[in-house]
Image: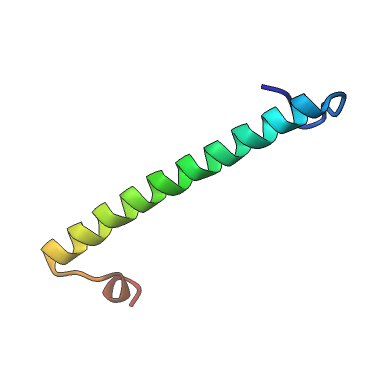
Length: 54
């Protein structure tokens, strides 16, 4: 993968953009998975995030 400062070729920049897009989508998927698990845990235990904030 190319570094951010490398602007010598368009292929390089396109490569970086596609890598960045894929990593962002991966992070979102992981976050959503964790969020569902956390919400499921709170539902099972009877807690809610609102109660924790008090």
